[in-house]
Length: 249
Image (cartoon, rainbow, N blue to C red; front, top):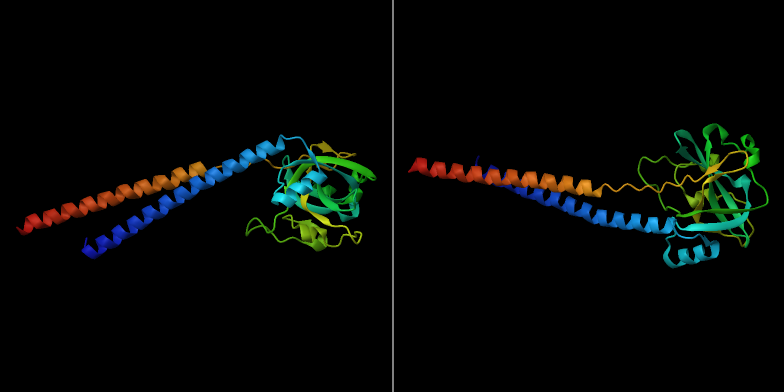
């Protein structure tokens, strides 16, 4: 191997080791962050439900109310139903998001739960369109500010069909009083079925995968393999240099 090719290969190897080790370190940092997130969620979901006033205060203080148990009361605006494409127990269908008018006139979107694909339209499940005052206990969810990934389809507000929870788009078109506001979070209803069987609540996904340790081991392992290859490259070059010196003498 010529000297120029050797130094080029050595440079690429050292850069690769640095990059792979950096990726491994990043995954270790992500591991700590993800474990902290999982611990916080576990602590929250096991807590006693708060009322809407306390939840609003928590949101105002931190902007984060994800998975906090909450109890809300009010009346549903069934004409404002929105539909979020979902699956439940192996069936394709929709999560039904319905605006709930609270006692002070504000509105919070409640994910009432899952209905099969063919039961999207309210007239197919009239018993579930509960009138009058209701009380819902469930989990608060933060409202995302953007799609979670490039491959998530765009929402179709004209058809009330949603693939990600765009609160502004979901609230558009609601008929509200002049001083009412749409609260900046959602509530996922807890387990239980509406009259007639649909929607069925308790669809919140709480199981959060944490594979960062495996990723870190993979990146560090590749860095180690490349480091061994680099050492072998240097040893081979030194031996070749010594052999060339011996032959010339």
